[in-house]
Amino acid sequence: MSSSPEKKTESYDDDIGAVRSENGDRKVLRPEVRQAAERQLVRKLDFRLLPTIVVIFLMNYIDRVAITAARLKGLEAELGLTDIQYDTVVAILYASYCPAQIPSNMVSNYRRSPSFYIGTCVVLWGLTSALTGITKNFADIMVCRIFIGLPEAAFYPGAIYLLSRWCTRKELAFRSAILYAGLLVSNAFGSLWAAGILGNMEGKMGISAWRWLFYIEGAITIFIGFMSMWLLPDYPNNTRWLTPAQRHLAQVRLAEDAGEADQDSQEASIFEGFLMAIKDPKVPLFMLMCCSQLLGLSFVDFFPTLTATLGYSTTVTLLMAAPPWILATISTLINAWNADRAGERFFHQTGWWWVVMVGYIISLSTMTTPGRYFSMFLMTTGYCGFTLTLVWVANAIPRPPAKRSAAIGLVNGFGNLGNLMGSYIWKTNWSPQYHQSMIIALWALAFASFLSFLVRTMLVRENKRMEQQEMDLMHGAEHERIEEAARLEGITLEVAVRRRKGFRYLY
Image (cartoon, rainbow, N blue to C red):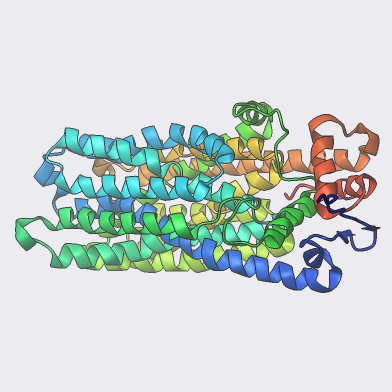
């Protein structure tokens, strides 16, 4: 007995941009259910993706900067570190962390399971963090710091890239800010957490309190890493806990947002995205801008040390380090929410660096406790601007995904060289004023502001060029992505072309 294959029919509706077919995707694309279905999809993603990456990022920075809190409780003396050796221990993490981000992000674009990849990296850096507690000398802790930088490199640029595979241009900034709030909260509550451990665990089981700090934080990170393998999504086409209709809708949303499908051409190699990114003049500017701003914001790795210049005990110093970061967290979320609503990037990023510059000027002008402490609140708000840097990169280099992924890795990887250089400008012999440190940081932020203005100027010019671009100039790989967008949305190629011409860069 034979049967003929089932015939599927489609009809095109120009007004609603929908395909009315016999498959399960039809209900998602119908106008009366599309809006509700999209809200349900975004809510489902936000519920699992955002809390997971926030917690991971919290542990990422707590593990990375635990060494600054441990310094206040005898780490240097017990390991016999000199000042230059301690600065090298702080800086060496970036020697592996920075270059590893570029290949990591390139690989993540071609992996079908970023949830497993990111989760594995979290487990590995948690294990390395815990092993820091058994170090005996300078060589031991150097090895741990080098190896903790490798798996940590996968997370932040990888998380931003993963968000960009799910969020539209006007959703990305706020959700990235929620992610970065994990870092800012870690600076606040990491200090409180460290104060509790360092204040209560000294000598327990014959172990120094600073060693307990690494054991406890490392064990928690390992647990979170295993959980994240289950909680995080993969990509819109293969996330296991979404229905087929939801996966299709997730792809359609991004295709509508940019006017072309969020996918690479069939023949694209793993290195093609890197070559495309490095040839784009915006990418080197973003790289220098990120490096310069992170040099200007490098106080973050020395914040407990700066707070200690106010003259209080270790516990009080760590407690006083928390409120400025709480303010920065709130400001970051409000700033990013407004940036999404306004569709603007330059002032929402660069304006906060100017606030930091005012903070440095106040600190250069006074050593009074109220003035210095107030300036620390202003300094922490600089991270409101940094939160938008990779978001702006994703907005300015949206397609194809391989290029976007490589660009994010390049910008954040090269940018963190600013943190490496910053590890050496907050010298102990410049304390307690740190005037030289602040002057270097101030000029770095001024240079970053200039580069940011150049990027904005380039994007304004490119938008004007797109307004004059003729439809028939689109061909090759770009034409393939527009054609795929038309297929996903169930519209004709002509309508997809018209929507593509509606795309503009956010600046």
